[in-house]
Amino acid sequence: MADKFSKETRSYVMSRIRGKDTKPEILVRSYLFSRGLRFRKNDKRYPGSPDVVLPKYNTVVFVHGCFWHLHEGCKYAKMPKSNVEYWENKLYRNRERDEHNQKELEEMGWNVITVWECELKKDKREKTLEYLFTQITSEDNE
Image (cartoon, rainbow, N blue to C red; front, side):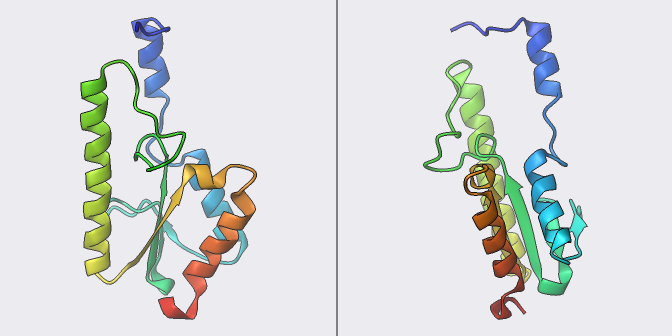
């Protein structure tokens, strides 16, 4: 199936997709900051440049987009119907890289938490953020 946009329009649309400071990331960071947690963001010293690094709690948080990181069982993680080989390679490589980075961080002693974009939709947002805060500040973490 042909793309519904021209090549130039598609290029522009794809160029607007950000790798950091996405709306879900900002939502998570704003919530954690409002609850009194202080953190570093997108710290390149750690594998995968975690979206949120909380040294006090020895915890890192990744905020993943369901499409870009192939969230299993999620309706937002659909494989595109055009240029399938390219997208399969790209998205499965993203997932493998995420698993590798998580394993490396855990070996370094970090607690790794992943928040998915679909968990931040309006109907689930409050519950997800409260659970995230509890995971970070629980006694088991310290």
